[in-house]
Image (cartoon, rainbow, N blue to C red; front, side, top):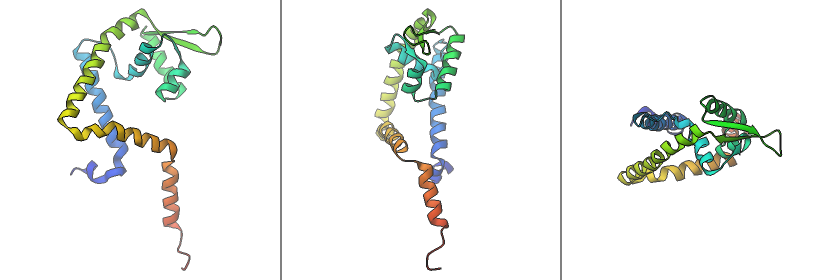
Length: 169
C-alpha cells in the first residue's frame, strides 16, 4: 500500500486531482497525436455548443458548474483563438450569447470522433477492470453529499466536541 492509499480520506482531493490530471493529460496527448489543436479543458463549452446554437456565458457557467468569471475567462481564451464569438442578446442587452465560429465548427467536426473513441476506450478499460465501473456513480454520490452537507462544518463540529472539556472535570 502506498502513502496515498494508506492515508485514505486525508488525501482524497490530492488523489482525485492526480487522477484528473493524468486523465486529461492522456486526452490531450490523443488530440496532439491526431494533429488536432484542441485542449480537453475546452470540452464542456464545445460539447454544450454542439447541442445548442448559442448559450449565454451565465448558461455556460451554470451548466458547467463553474464561476461566471471562470466561464468568461475560458470564453475569452476561445474568442482569442477565433473558435467562438459572442454577441449581445437582442432581448437582453446584458447577456452575451456565445456561438461557435466557422473555425470552431470545423474543429468540432474533428474532435467529435475523438469523443466517440474516448467513450469506447473507457468502456474497454472498465470491462477489463469491473471495479472501476463504480467510479462515476461514487463520484456523483460524493458530489451530491458535498452539495447537501458542509464538510467544513462537520469537521468544525468534530473539533469542538474533541476540544470541549468533559462536564465532570
